Amino acid sequence: MPIYKTHGGGQAANFTKRTVGMFTSSRSAAAEGRIPLLDIATLRLRHWQQFGFTFKGCSLGLATFVDNLFAIAPTPEAATYILDDCARLLLSRWGLKIGGDSKEYMTCKAYPKPITVQAGWERKSSMRVLGHFLDDDGSIKTCSDHAFAAMTKAFYSNFKPGLHKSSKAVKLKFLRTCVCTVARFRWSRWPFTRTNADKLDALQRRFLYSLFPMSPRSHEPIQDFYTRRHCAASIIAGSSGKWSQLWASDFEELGCSCT
Image (tube, rainbow, N blue to C red; front, side, top):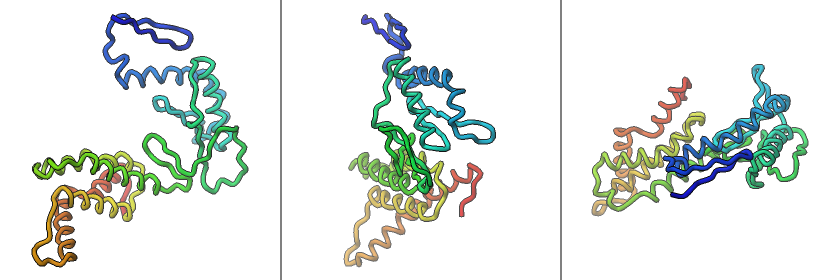
């Protein structure tokens, strides 16, 4: 049986027996990965408070998710300082280095002041954050466009000819679990708009065209065929649940209203 040795914080631990999930489980890796971040946060929390964004008497400075670091501050200089200070201590105390390609910051698009952050930081107009895309003008265009493209990729990457022989329930389950979930993960933070609702329904109909293929009838004008196919897909979408209605339902569960 091999002996596994882990190092951290100047200490080492040997594992001489099988440890279920310790070396292959993403959950245990995520839990262990938070230890260095919590160590640094505990050490520097009070110092960072003076640079953080103050809201209702509380100072928001550093946010973490697994090994992702985010700083919240009233100026880009303060935000990048917090992250640079964290990176310095991660390197000195734990031997961990933050890659240069991870150093990004974003301000409001109309931020009026000159920016003097340290070298190595790249200003972004759109930033990917935990699967979402944030735009500096507050819009969701980048996020929604990326989501719709990812839905199309998810559908055609997983679409197999055998699906044509499957039951209606199986086809709709495939659409619900493999495609709709891509947008549903993101639309939790989107403001409800009729434009994006219509785009969702149009995507749903397009995928239904492939799952439930139809052919033109003899001597049927092509425009009549398109209309008939559109109506058939709309009926299936309506009976199984339009994606725009699902989005509206999720939105209203958050206590918001749709117009």
